[in-house]
Length: 320
Image (cartoon, rainbow, N blue to C red; front, side, top):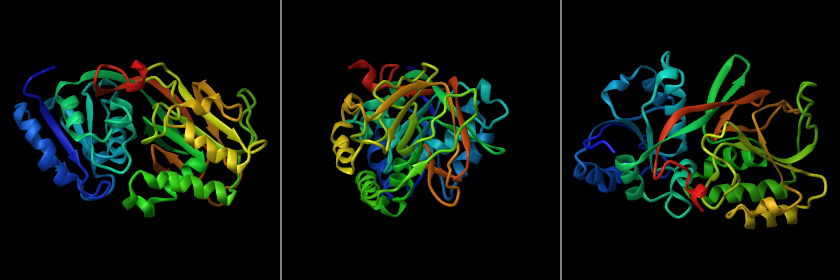
């Protein structure tokens, strides 16, 4: 790796439990200084600030962009970079150091046990191997978003976006949200999609698509996901033939990906999909944990569009 790296650090001071600044000063800064890195820091003060900064930042001044926060911070950075006029030419690698309640991307890079290890992640920023990743292009009306993690509809979107008031609880809030959704017996139904596509018009518990193997600590939902295979991984669970008790029991297997062994879980590799919610009055649709309007949207894969700093050029699970 290049010595004396020049880093642009994007820090969300309210990420997770609001400890990002303390984490940086106590744990990250000493390691960067010891490695003779130079860096300048932007502390975000409002939503979308990192997105706006990335659209105009002179990237030639840096060797890497480093997010100190959670997946939400990285989401803003990615969408800002890919909204630039020179987006197709951007090769600068992105690094992430965990300081948020949602750190799925970092878990994918370092594994379930080290995904929240600040020192480990900082060393990856300094010594990491560049890894190209696919990005998902999400279109909704005249708007476009870019996703590097997941697109969710149904109980996963509810448990993620519907528990924002529980962020202080950390990762456990996602599990609590899933249990609440199952017990409430919520229903999720799709309208038909165009005739030249495969049609799914079922009563669903779950529609969950993604590019990342882990979606949170203890949740290896997409164990076959690869960073740059040009495909998305899709998990579907239909309401017919599965009880609430059985659904809850499947959570016990999600930490190892063993939930795929059950007939009730449908797993596919796809290039694109379009989803139209039937009930347009209210609901949650999540893109990388960020809420978008409860309206039809379409997703397709853009191969090898961004570069991450990784331990060895692959997601953690790909080596086990």
